[in-house]
Image 1 (cartoon, rainbow, N blue to C red):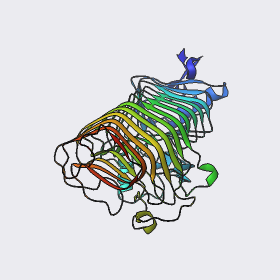
Image 2 (image 1 turned 120 degrees about the vertical axis):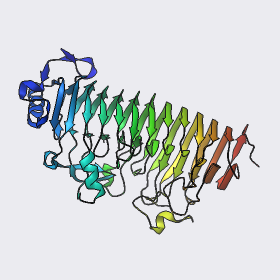
Image 3 (image 1 turned 90 degrees about the vertical axis):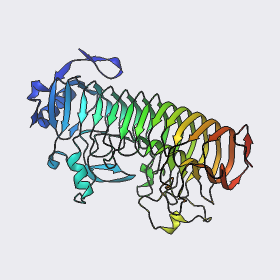
Image 4 (image 1 turned 90 degrees about the horizontal axis):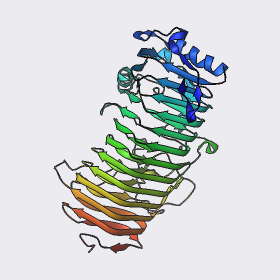
Length: 440
């Protein structure tokens, strides 16, 4: 007997009983899917990958199914593109045809992937095809869960994802715990964990080291029907170690449905380009609000705090995005507000203590830094602190903020900077106490 979701015991079905070989060569897709289908017909249960290396294309989880990975088991992604059928899925905020994930679930209830085994997407060929421009459709994600209810991902190692690694979309009650996610630092778009328009999400006790953002909270884009751009809300990220990647914990840039009620705490970031990174742009819309970040330790990041409302990736050269002047506020204007950073330490910071770049017509509102210590150090070539046009090139710079209404600095300590300690432009309703150096 093996524990299924919620601690309920269920009869275990070994994929070998359905013809799987597990020799690292034989394609076991049909056998694994047959075991899942048999458990589904019985009303649900646990499907076990025993010791071995099981080659597979896309497999589809169903209601009340746990895929259990023995510690000595590995699920190996097939290298044959034909083993990943096309499905309609969300990619970078838009619904479109794409290759199904290696482990895929759509509209399922009470699904789980658990155990101490490994899911290896063997994404090297997909990365090559992407770089060479040979792909017309988005690459498979490693694990995708769309429109699901009651999801558990626990304990296993995920590596070499063809693109995003773990991607719940429009799902409720999602628990992700104890995962080790490892993708090469130069692998393209291999984000670690990306909840998108989800609610009641708990991410805890994970180690993530990837080629893009480690954890990203998203909510659809302006390119999708409005009714599908639901908020991403009630999200907890805690007790995680996040290494390398473009950002530690990121919100956006897809913010059309709104992101709210997010708590990020008790984490360590090491060598990520940015620490806490928030990004959006004109035309995208949505409100990012009620964000709390506390008890974080960072080291060797380029910039520990960034907010970029002129995010240029995918919109380079668009004047409406890069314009630093005030434009009319409309449904496509994104809003960031009620964001607080507390009890955070960052050392060996290379580019800037912080870089906040709001919109002239919609400033970031009610932004606070309390008991935050930033030590700049090391040598790095001057570079832009975020992905936007017209930004200054910085190296060991101080605290930069533009277009903020209600900026509250209490116990902010910045050391090792070159040039001005503070560069503030268009900042209103500023309150400062116990900061070092003091604001001129």
